Length: 277
Image 1 (cartoon, rainbow, N blue to C red):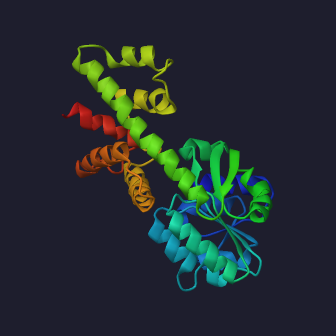
Image 2 (image 1 turned 90 degrees about the horizontal axis):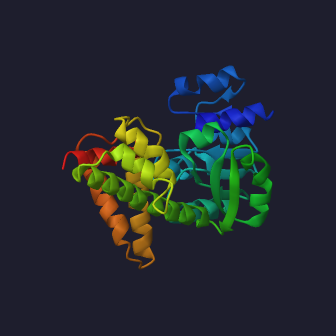
């Protein structure tokens, strides 16, 4: 996703500095005119706006708050935008550390997956100060279509957790519906056509269910990443004293998917679990 997002900024005429743990994955950006650096901190030292798209909260913490990281090496007055789905509490810590050094920070996780990134139509959920959001908006508009400031630091991550709770529980819903249809002796593809346009309809039912029925489990969004997001959501809900039993069920099912060795499949691999029950 980060490669697609950076390519839109290059296409818009911005000077783009990049770092990735695997340089070869950035080659297309370098060929398009991006400037390579040997660390995220070195990128921050060269740019007025720093945008990150990482894997896990521990990656975010190390990249921003570690020795030689972004907060330490960023230019005075730089704007830092983390678009990773990460911890709301970590987003608050990064914002506090940035403010202490005269920097601005936003948490801006996204929804829309690899297709949304390629087509620059991501949903972008932002937490932070209004002034920083206003400064970031021209860049974010090159990456997405639905862009909203939800509140102070951490609010973007809380919104993404709400999104992921809905996604995870919704995945269980369509998998169980089509598994039920199959068990009842119906053609799941025909049932899918019948129900996807009605009250049961959803983006996942329309887009991911046909892939699962065709045996296509290639990742748009990895099982291992939805598991990461569910862990964060469960921890955040616990901190808010909120019981989320539907999410807990979804997490248990996806744990079983991963235990079967399918964590590098797309999230539609949940349907594989039902076909083996």
